[in-house]
Image (cartoon, rainbow, N blue to C red; front, top):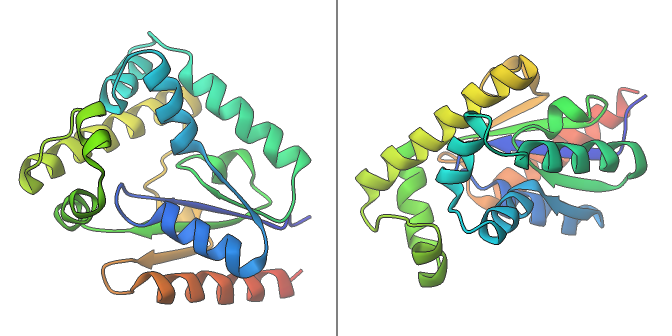
Length: 190
């Protein structure tokens, strides 16, 4: 049975949060961000996102259990929801699953253009796109190793998703419309 939930995964800077907010607004759905929850827990523990990822990868943190448990609860209890998360597609297999793809250099440039000075300092982000692209790749590689080790899944495998969108080739409004249109077709197939 299909849930009226859309999960949006993707590379850092690909527009997961922006797209999730815009799709939720357009459909009148609620929005949840596992990345926001991850960042909040990391800050509470006095770490940046990269350090939290590395600690989790090395088995020194329960942060994945907390975030994944919340995603599983949401998948069982909620409907009419858009979730931006790297693993919600796995925890909510009856959802419509979207992946947003983007080159790391473009991602770094986009993020640095929009980031607040507070987040730049809090998360120890270099203000150089090339250097930051390397840090983003390190973070993504760490997450992928961790998800493979914990769950035997590969979030970068495009066959996990119902829709894959290149966000370099589409502006946020176009991406939103592509998601909404494909979701409507997916729902109609039930």
